[in-house]
Length: 269
Image (tube, rainbow, N blue to C red; front, side, top):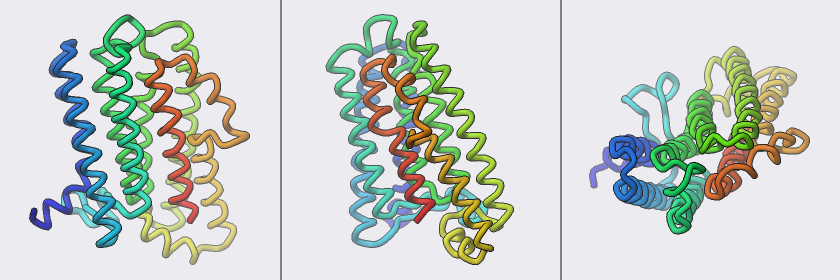
């Protein structure tokens, strides 16, 4: 395998689920092809995450600049030990939940979980989570959050029952508020430092006046505390998850709030 292909492996956990979601949509309501595509896609993502963890441990962080743009101008993805470990765990959880949902048959039968929507949206959710873990800058982290939140808005309201729409509305409002707060935090960080790249921020934030640095950290901490449902900002959580289908609740509880915890670790250390 050439070095360029090895570098591009960092893209795989984001690109593969999006490609698989497109294929699932192309097959419409045919159950068997969608099921097969989803399983193969997530198995490939788990394999790529395992390779990234191995290489990050043996050879240091694995990075890729999308489109060849420099890190301070374009989109950079970096897999270090922490992000690779979180990525591997999250993709294994996603695959296991998908297999569980297929084994239970609840994805393919009834109005509660329409098949034509579940599989592609589930793969888009996986792509958003992977992008959030691999992001090397604040704005791409925001994009990862928005992708996974957009998919979660669909999954939490599957079937359109009254209870799910009501709980989904709470979840969406909280998500939009936290996303707006995240944008404010990104704007403040960029105004103070001239960059949103994590590596550059680690060098520039210590040079800021202490009160400015504390304000930026508090803004980011508040944003991710809402997304991670940290007490006392967790009042929205009990009303949002229980009414969703069982596999959706499992992947939400196992992944989505944990992405917020990861973002706190990444920005506060």
